[in-house]
Length: 229
Image 1 (cartoon, rainbow, N blue to C red):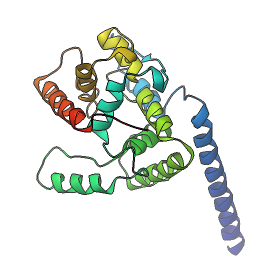
Image 2: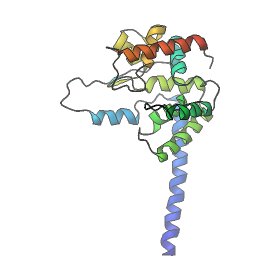
Image 3: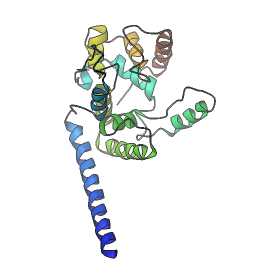
Image 4: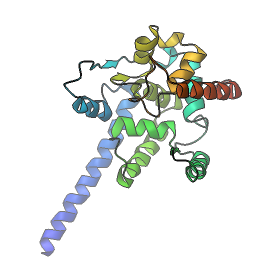
């Protein structure tokens, strides 16, 4: 029995070492290489109902400098206004979300853009404490090895913005028939309105709530005015 446990511990040790080496390698790799797919994209593909004829996969990578400053400002205003200064975790936002969730049925999250990028790029969308732990681990690695500019570039290129639509460039082309570089303030703010529920909200036919959300983001954009990364 003792021999069995010693072997099990040895295998566990090697597994942990391999995981840490592979995770660090992956984060460093994606600092320079644009990820072709994410776990979420694969999951969505297999969730697709073959009876539905309008399946699509719109994804087009665009460099940070070819994305409109309006979109950069809108996404930070809507999702993580302390993004330029925090180290992956925004404790102020977590506290605010905790207070809001006491009195609201619609739950608010305190995840930063870095955390969301870590989840989308390396993990599945499941809601468990174990996945959250891995998310924090990858968040730390990304903040350590990547620049803020790279984190935001990857985030903007892999986020889900509709059924089968991933990334700002694909969304801009699909919904507004223009490149992401030419997005206006109004269009950029409207795009952020789908982020909480990208498969339920449709930029082709925005709801009253989406226009309301757009207005809130435009006000926040006016307050922040400029983003320096």
